[in-house]
Image (cartoon, rainbow, N blue to C red):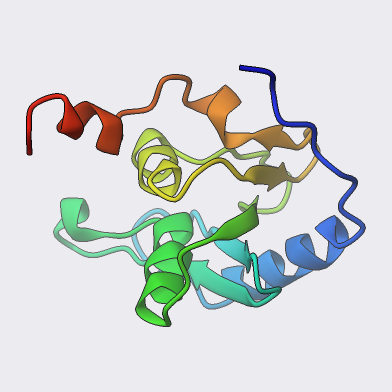
Length: 138
């Protein structure tokens, strides 16, 4: 199957700015590693999220999934892009769990500071998904 060609996104800088604003709301008292994300829906809405740490480390949540779950809770199911920003001077890419969670909703452009944009499928090739469950009859 041919790779989808990406159209230029003149709003990438706006999404990065929205992610920076979201980062200001991060709750990271243990690591001080603040992250913000801005998710662009197919309808043009921008849903933001920030990482939320917890003293019980495993129950913390990444900024990307915070934005994704908020978007889903508001009825969105189709996405164009997500921008992610970390602490000043730190170039990030979504963690594996966030890549998997985002891939549930199809391919989207991942916009990162000081790095080229990349399709999600390049960050998580052959992601686990509904097609795998269909093979088992689930």
